[in-house]
Each structure stands twice: as structure tokens, then as C-alpha cells.
Amino acid sequence: MKPRDYELDPFWMPFTANRQFKSAPRILVSAKDMHYTAEDGRRILDGTAGLWCVNAGHCRAPIVAAIKRQAETLDYSPLFQMAHPGEFRAAGLIAALAPAGLDRVFFANSGSEAVDTALKIALAYHRARGEGHRNVLIGRDRAYHGAGFGGMSVGGIPANRKAFGNMLGRVDHLPHTHNLEHNAFSRGQPAWGAHLADDLESRIIALHDASNIAAVIVEPVAGSTGVVVPPKGYLERLRAICSKNELLLIFDEVITGFGRTGCAFAAETFGVVPDMITFAKGITSGTVPMGGVIVRREIYDAVVNNAPPGMVELFHGYTYSGHPLATAAAEATLALYHEEKLLDRARELAPYFEEALHALKDVRHVIDIRNFGLMAGIELAPAPGKPGARGFEVFLRCFERGVLTRVTGDIIALSPPLIITKEQIDELVGTIGQALREVGPD
Ligand SMILES: Cc1ncc(COP(=O)(O)O)c(C=O)c1O
Figure 1: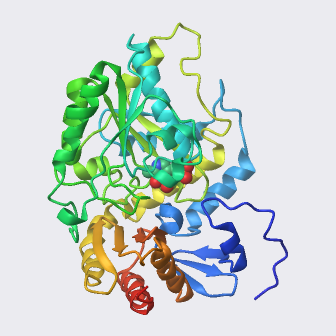
Figure 2: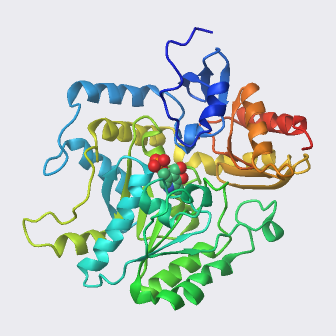
Figure 3: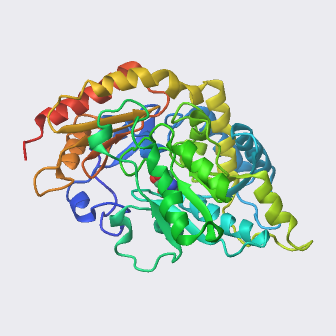
């Protein structure tokens, strides 16, 4: 192993146990297709598409070439009151993949920014229609919508909130749909739980009144909380209640977008069309940060057409919204998805992935396995008095054996690149099985 030419201490790592990591670092130095290379030269099979983002696989030549070309041609152009062609082209390509009616695209640079953007658009939309009193935002328990104050407020992961006091004030949360008693070891969408959507009407609307609520935001398949698949009929009910009460429905598709569930967006997979879709990650296959919101045309029209002529209509945006390198990467990534039919591939591989995963059912510590498309959660019984320790041990053992997984507490989450082969699925699941058999009883 080459000696490191850098110090570990100056870098404050995100969502990481800094002291633990720095005492035994796991450092990746390169990547190609399905594999990383660690600093000690080991090849690591990527079971998580980086962080749910490298859907086309790593360092794919056409994407790398497009980024390089763009960096040499137009590195940056101001993006307020100015534009470059890539923004329009990328927006058109993204809109073409979205459900009919959602065809206006606002760019941001991350999932967190995409979510904050969608929440702000929801408020601006109601205000533009003379209904500015609609300003309550509804999220869901266990949701992850990024690390900004907006996303954190509608999010429902307690550890992500507890240190940060002031959040958006007018927020409420639906109950989550995770329930081991009813749904353990469901394959695909669980049968139990559609009724949990009714809480929106029976409790939340009853409490706040529909006339005060701006929007409901959910992940169609919740990812970061450990992969929670929507019960059959659940998203349909949410849609119906939102439509009846004129609440905007936002699908946060930062993880589920770009092929993870077997279609371009989970909205299409589940046949439920929201009013806005947030995206990030897979749009550039993780190569250049990019996020954004796909908006129903009526929302764009209401905001834009109700502003005085010549005035900025939405006072929102980021210095790098639609950065040339990001749009170039997006165009090349979408072309590659198309060429290699990667947006359909999760649907084709899902049955094989499902069989492989559920073979772990009787392995010790496993209390649930859930899957949809190319995403899966394997939930472990926590070690007594040490929540998260068992999950982390499995993660470490897999890494030592050359497989990258992700853990949320005691849930192993999998979301491999869409180019994964059946043999690599076997390796991924087999390695997790081995690791599970090795970790101690407590
Ligand atoms: C559903 C969802 N929304 C938003 C985010 C935040 O994305 P980012 O980390 O790019 O800000 C994530 C990140 O995993 C996510 O899963």
C-alpha cells in the first residue's frame, strides 16, 4: 500500500463516526464498472451504487468523455438571467422520461436542495393562486429528505433532527408503513398497510384543515430508513386524498429515480402520478452533483404567469443550478441508460435478486428481508443493548471480504448499479450470508 500523503484529521466527515473511522480508515482510490479499488489494492464489489447513485456503473467512458469535453468548452456560465444550451437539453430529456403532465424542470445540485426547492415551489404555487394560507407541509415518520432545514423538517429520522432545534414550524408527519408483525419477509409490495394513508384525512387534515396544507412529500420507496416498500394501494390512496383536498403530492425520487424500481421513475412503476418529482443521484450516475424538481406544468404556469411581466417569478436558485458539467454528465448518462436499456434492467433482474435475497431468510439474526426492483433491506435483530452494532459488524466483515454494503442501524441496505450481473448478485448476497454467519450472538 502506498503511504498516504495526507493527514486524516482536518477533514470532518459527513454522517460518519469520525474517531472510529480515522482509527481504521476505509479508503477507496479508484473505480470501474461494478468495482471500487481500495487503497490496499483490493477490489470491492459495489452493492450500493456508491450512495444509491452510480446507476450506470463507475467511470463509464461516454460520461467521462462528455464531462471532459464540457470542461474544455464551457466550464461555467452564470445561471441567473443567463443560460447555456445544456440546461435546456437536459431539462427536455428529463421531462421526456417523466409521467405525462410533469414537464417543467428546475435544477439544483443535490437531493437536499431538490427537496427544499420542491417545498418552496409548493408554497409559491399556492400563494400565486391566492391561497398563501396553504403553508403546512406534511412529511412522514422515518422519511429521509436530505440534510437541509426543509428536508430535515419533513423528514422523520430522529437522529437527524435531535441536535438541531429550530425546524420549519408548520409541519406534520404521516405514520410510516414499516411493520414487521404484518409485513416481515414480504416480496415486493406488502399486502398490509394501505390504510395508513388514511391518516392524512382522518387526523392530519382533520387537525390542520385542508385549506391550510400545501403539500405532502413521501419517498415512493423509503430508502435511507432501511428500504421500506409501499403497501399495495397505499400510494394510490395518498394520491386520491391529495387530489380531493387540492394538496400537492411530491414524490421524492432522489433514490428511486433513474431505473432503481424498473422504470425511469417509481411514479411510473407504481402507476401513481404526483405533482412534483425530486431527483438527484442517478441523473448523472453520481459523476457530477446534480439534483432538481420535475414540476407539473400547471404549477409552473401558475407561478410564472401570475408574476408581473419582466419580474423574476421565483426568487430561488443556486449558483450551480444547471452547471455545465452537470448537464453534460446528465445528457451522457441518460443516453447511456437508453442505449443499454438500463432503466428497464431492475425489472428484469428483480426476480433473481429477490430469490437470492430471500435465501437468507433462515440465517441467524435476520428478522426481515424486503425488496423492490434493485433495492433491498435485510433487517437484523439488534444485539442486546447495542443497537446498530451488529449491522455495522456485518458491514465491516463484508468490506473485508470485498463487498460494499450500507447499513442504517441494524438494517443492511442494498442498491447495486443497474449493470450488476447475476453472478455478482450471488457474490453480493453470498458474502452477506457468510458475514451474518460469522458475527457473534451478541
Ligand atoms: C429520498 C432522498 N431525498 C433526499 C436525499 C438527499 O440527497 P443529497 O444527499 O444529495 O442532498 C436523499 C439522500 O440519500 C434521499 O435518499
